[in-house]
Length: 365
Image: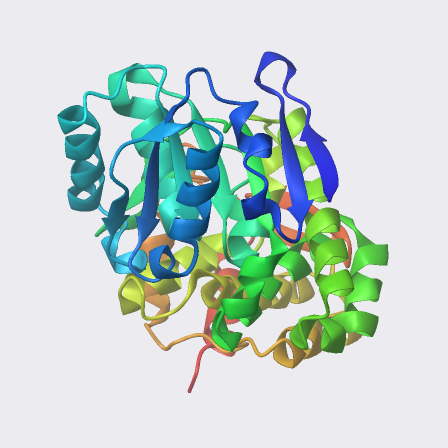
C-alpha cells in the first residue's frame, strides 16, 4: 500500500492506494467518529464489492444502515437520486456522527459526497472509488454535486472526505471503455503540469491498457500526488490565475459535450479527452503550442482509446453551453489552455474567432 496526504490543515486526509484494501477494514475504522456508517453504491458496483466491504466492517464491530443502492450512470446524478439518499438517512435516523461511505465511481462519489455535505449541515464522508477516473481525480479534492439539465456539476459543495481508499483490485472488473475514460484524466496531469509524467505515459501506455498492476499503481499515485498539491494550494478554486482551475483542462468543452448530447451518452473521460483536443487546438491557434506538440497530444489520446473528435452540436450551441461554465466570471469565459506540454494557464482573452475556429476544426464533419 502507498499513502499520500492531502495537506489541508485540520481537514487533511490520507489517500491509500493498493490491492486488497477492501479486506482491511481497520483502514476505515480509524476514521470513524462512531461505529456506524451508511454505504452508498450503485446497481453495477454493489453486486461486485458491497458484500466484501460490509463483511469486513461487521467483523470489526461497525454497525450500518441497510445499503443505499441507486441506479448506475451519469443520467442519475440528479436531485431525485439525491433525495433517495436523504430519505434513507432520515428514515434510518442517521445523526451527525454517522459516516457516509461512497462505494463506486465518480457519480456515486459526487452524489454521496453532496448528501454528506448537506445532510444535517454536514456529516463525515469516506471515498472508496472503484473506477480509474474516480481513483485519480473525482475522489480527491472535495468537489461534490449533481447535474442540472442546463449544466453539469452546477449544483454542489466543497466537502472533503476523511479518507480515500483506492483499491486497485477493483480495476480488474472495469470495462475497457471505462479504463480508457480514466486514462483521459491521467493524461491531463501530464499535460497541465508534469511533463516527465507525460513522457512516462507515452512510454508505458501499453502497460496501462494491459492493466499491469505496477504501472497502474504508479499512475494513480502520480496523478493523486499532482492533484493533492494543487488542491492544497487552492482548495476552493479561488485563485485569480492558475490554481485549481488548471485541473479543468478540457472540461469546459467536455461538459458542453456531455450536456449537449445528453448525460451518459459520452463518459466523462471521453468528453474531457475531446475537450482537451479542442483546448490544444485553440492553444495552437494562439501560437503557444507547436503543431508537433498538438499532434503528440492527439496521438497519445488516440492510443488510449479515447475520442479526439467532438460531436457536431454546432458552434453556437457549444458557446451557449460553455457560457454556463463555473469558470465564467463577470460574463467572461475563462479557459484552461496550454502554453506548452506540461504548462497550463487560465486565459480569458482568446479572440472569439479563434475559439469558434478551434471548436469547428475539432468537430465531426
